[in-house]
Length: 370
Image (cartoon, rainbow, N blue to C red; front, top):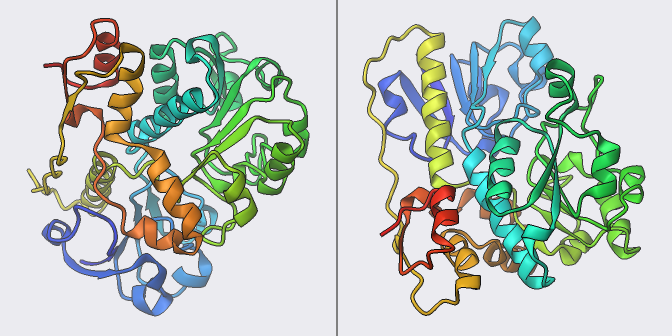
């Protein structure tokens, strides 16, 4: 079997070879000629896979090491015998880490207590549920909005969008990007949405760029209709809006889900999809180990109890670092994504000298106590 894999997918090189003959290329170099004789592709979101690239090729399966599929023309694939698979939930904990770190930054910058705030979560899938759990651990009131799930499961768990617009101090989006259908999400946060909010909320988009109308976001900030934005996902990536970049409180190059743990899981799920689809029956495959962080011990001695939570979370990941870099060199958006440094999630870290009032929260997030 012949496989073409994105060269920037970690923990794959030397491992995918257990399943067949593997060639590696950067995602932006995937062309019809490059894939024409391949049986399977292991990809990210860099290239769009539809008729223009797949027609006339031997491709039978596309394994995307991502949770989304808006880079795949699923309708064309479904009608032309090209199977496609994603890695749902692979980076849910990573995005939760990003959102939690961002919330703690907003609370510090604007001097408010998260326990006194209401957060509206739009999209209650794998990622939204993780964010929901974390926000409750932080003491926040949570409103969940997910019309497709509400239609299937009833309204007990969910809040309508009007209530969310009226009551939320912070609104975060965790939906797939869909441009058609009853519950399309493209430009879900548009001019009408942003002018209908009542508490001048902060807007967070760590899902897909097209969910928030970037032009409407700019105007909403400039006109004081919202308090600020945290943007990991942008329209027209990598050619992002420089004015919006300047206005954003936190601005990162679509890396919320880029923890090493999430990437490892996505690679594993992609290979499992390959194994199952082609009936390879690989038993006990080998996987690379995730590197240990350089500073896996979080020593909170001398840190005031009221600052220990953010200190510990920011020790694992601080979005301000990437914000500073991206704002200084926005033209390197794609480079930053392709050369992302090691980032580990909470379970890779152990705590020392934690205040007894803070320790339960950190342990519940996933840290280890010492």
